[in-house]
Amino acid sequence: MEFSAVIFYLFAAILLLAGLRVITAKNPVHAALALVLAFFTAAGLWILLEAEFLAITLVLVYVGAVMVLFLFVVMMLDINLEQLRQQFWDYLPIAALVAGLLIVQMILVLGGETFGLNPPAPKPAGYSNTKELGLLLYTEYVYPFELAAVILLVAIVAAIALTLRRRAGVKWVDPAVQVKVKREGRVRLVNLKPQKPQAQSEEDA
Amino acid sequence: MEQLQDLLGPAWTPVWTLVKIVAIVLPLLTAVAYLTWAERKVIGWMQVRMGPNRVGFFGFRLWGLGQPIADAVKLLTKEIIIPSGANRGLFLFAPVLAIAPAMAAWAVIPFTDRLVLANIDASLLYILAITSMGVYGVIIAGWASNSKYAFLGSLRSAAQIVSYEIAMGFALVGVLMSAQSLNLVEIVKGQEGGFWHWYWLPLFPLFLVYLISGVAETNRAPFDVAEGESEIVAGFHVEYSGMAFAVFFLAEYANMILISTLTSLMFLGGWLSPIPGLPDGFVWLAAKVSFILLLFLWFRATFPRYRYDQIMRLGWKVFIPVTLIWILLVGLILQTPYGHLFH
Image (tube, rainbow over all chains, first blue to last red; front, top):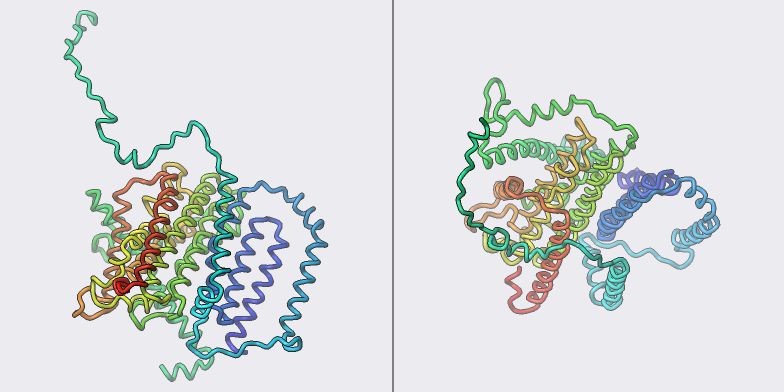
């Protein structure tokens, strides 16, 4: 067996196991971590397919940012495991439907040649799909790309607008004002007249 | 060497790669060990102390050069205490997750124009992706310890690292716009021509943002709120002892060296010599990395810790706008006849 084939089967096995752990793990944090592993091994498989840009972006965006925040939330939630287990069976029909659809899609892709789908010709050495992707994104698909960016921006603004509340009595100080503080604004020199110390020796005695 | 290649047959590539990995990791770990020594010495001198000066070799003190080895032996022989109620598996796995990305990133770091383990096209993206994994070690350590202080530390760290990663990523965008490549070797080659042609000059704001974000990313003072001894004891690694703690320590210092190397490669010309006549070589890279590491230590000895809201303000309201404006500026000027200023 070729070295790359060994790697492929190794990664595929890890990916399947991790995927299984996502839905079977009792603890939600373990499930989220299994999802991280699944993303990471999927990225490894994509690199084997020479889609290095997509693979690295998967790790950067999903593993490096999305899952961190996901984990963040899952860790802070006070989750009732029993209730969660109950919902697991409630959602089974919908899950079965999604799984069925996925299987149909996989059959269509894997048996592509019988359905008239031809695999792309292998690319010559030195072909950079990062460059090709960039060219397509910024020329042919520049409007959809910009639209997607604006939609995401709107979502960010909406999320902030929904959760922003102004509280009264916050002791916040503008950093620019803090920097400009001078001694005169904080310290007051008081000129006290010298006083004669009380004669205490008589009292003590 | 060819005889060996024939002997191993198809196993040659993995074995040879493994040899190269060891050739990178061993000097790296030695550098990490002696960086801890250098830190104690440098901060000692800055505070008019001696620093470690007792442990030497064969009866010679040698400025305390034996200290890191003595420390390693001590930590290796100490017990690893697992707190009650801790998630045992994840508790022990967290240090591994912290150090693995710090090591894996070195796969694409070029030491000279030919000395690189994997010269891939998207090496800058790879670095960005792999270093973004480092936060998991901290988060999982805090959660698995089953301790309030550790959890608070890990939450702080997660928010901080995710915030500063954005500014760091934008700083890299500026570099790749100037170099017109994602490949680190090409990026360094784009800076040829001596001190005034390195990218620190045309990309000066990005250089500063990258350097300071690097300090924040590695959880170093003055951005070390994830540890915050005075507030949350030691933050995410408060429950760790022995070698499990030492691995976190190693990861922090390995990350420092990594960030310093990246800054040298992207903004300070990597292995290129500052004066056009002198020969290029690894010596220059080592000198630049050492200089930036000195800055890291200097910051720690000089600045008081940032308040948490100040850290977030600096990251989101100062660094990100600065990088965005400079990227826009670079992009615009590259379209004019003055574009060569940024190449």
